[in-house]
Length: 263
Image (cartoon, one colour):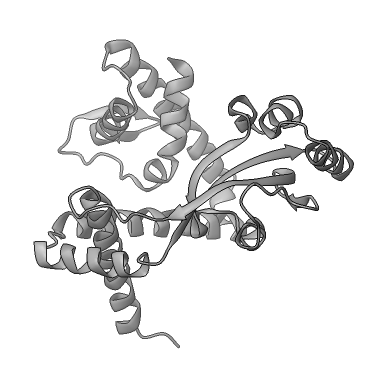
């Protein structure tokens, strides 16, 4: 429970920094060296804790209250030492505040977005047209820690060793449990470092040389490829809604930025 509480508080750090202390008219959660902590702080923390799967209880609220008090004590000491006046710290606090306010503004704007059926179908058609000639690739891979290990895997595959068996034995990627199978992927779903290689591979082929990525040295096998079947509007409606709302949010931000006087 304590670890869960700490995760909630960490996620809400910017919110706590910004939250106002209680007014004289409100009932305070606590008073720390004469500074009143408003109950709205607890409301925010409990709400977010519940959203992350916690169960509301006296124990949870007591832990949150103790943590808030401790943070207020530390914040007061930091101000006494003048830490809030240091340029780097002031800049960090300003960044946190602006980020939090930006997220709240965009979230509230998102609540107002009610995309019409016409707009959704137009976005669906746009996406469907882009995918009309797309292909899907069924890929398996083996990831090793060194180039030498990857080259040894390539040689073993060329000598006839089963790729899935090599993957289960040699790969350091979690996909090793499934024989290295990555399933069916569109080209834009493939790591850019690998997509150009995949595009030029023959079905059944294995890469001639290992490819270095952040995960490690990769060896690929193109198991199969096929024409992509575009899902119906109803099958992809939620994804279309998400796309339209993302576009609306981006347009809202761009509109505000464009209207701002920037010198």
